[in-house]
Length: 343
Image (cartoon, rainbow, N blue to C red; front, side):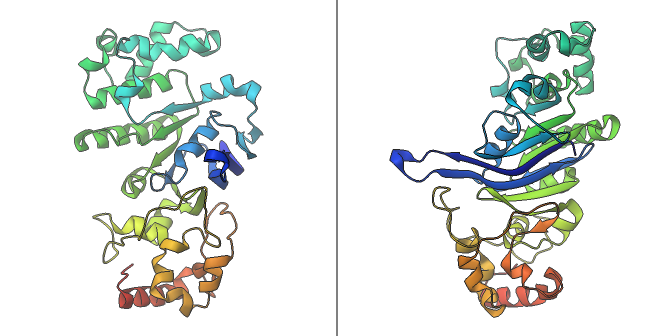
């Protein structure tokens, strides 16, 4: 396995001596070599904190991060970060307006020194990275400044700045969120080409299941600090089992679900995580009475769920089915429709 999180917890001190915020509250996550994994969830679910911890920018309260099955230690972070590079969501904010494209891409080489140059000329490495990112001919872009580029070109410069270090993994935080719809597809195609032609892996952080469907091999859905469902993209998005995943999927224009599911209330505060299933205060299955019909409504409110490892789903209602989620799918849908929750 290229990159893994094992029982990862990250807590931040509460305000004025209050309860700590459990931003990441027991996460297992794997990114296999040569694959693209999408980490999906609403704003505030802990995605960014998880990514910062995977990159060594936050220290876990418990658990560990492994790269190629070896724990990532503080003393190894500089070498580790050559292998795992971050691509930020806002290319305008990521690029120094006073630096040319050449300087922006060469910055990583200068920080990491001889180990990054690999015995080659800096100018040749910068040109190669820009070409790989789709900016050709590269020397035409060397003297330009960020304000002279389009949004898509700026994002390609940010990607080139990561590629110049020859990483094994890109961590892309909402890589197309700030771009026009017309150029989003180009950036996604670039990531797919890097995976197909060069075997580059990626962890793509997004709130958009549609993006995950188009780019990912695997999807992990995060809610309030935990992964609640994970699996291959075709299985997870083709037949979503967790009510939260179904709600996220239902709002997509191409969704096969009959109507959009509007979740009640806002996500809970991470300093006051609910007992039982952390999704239960907003769960349409519990509100519809379907969980009571399956005899699990009490468990939903009081009994915690195990951490999702590999392929799986953290849901008492799904677990109540004798032969998996499909055994109760029709009951779930009928009860939800009857109560006004169409999922």
